[in-house]
Image 1 (spheres, rainbow, N blue to C red):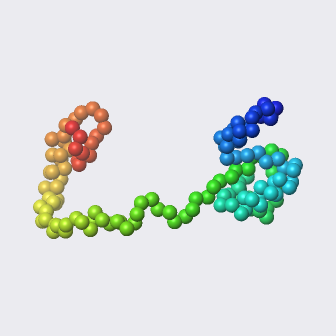
Image 2: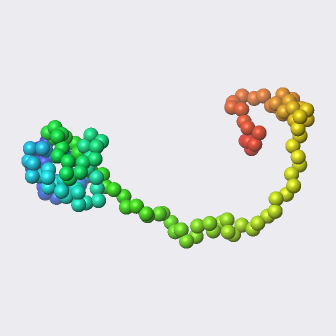
Image 3: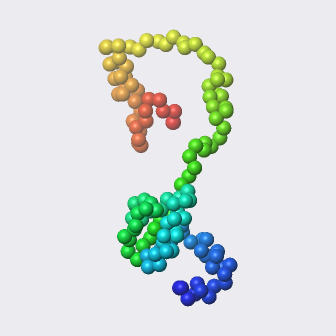
Length: 138
């Protein structure tokens, strides 16, 4: 594969390099190259990881040769989708309506009678999942 990559045209090689995953194999043998990459990563807004541990520019990695080092771009904080200038617009436009009086719930014997009628007398037994009392499905 390396020989085929060498024979590729320079532009095609560039496209192939761009389309590759963000993870790259970094050989540990050429130490200056690894140091250069680590120094560049420290000054850039991304995080390098090895074996799910963050690598800082001060830490010397004791990773095996051709280890996968992940490079993750950090997102800028504080950006919000949409404008906050119109937050609460709908609630502010809704007119205030006074609460209406509700009929009091039955208690004691009357409540037990209502439960019995709801569960056993008027209940429609059918197939499928049992629906709740507020369900509008037919």
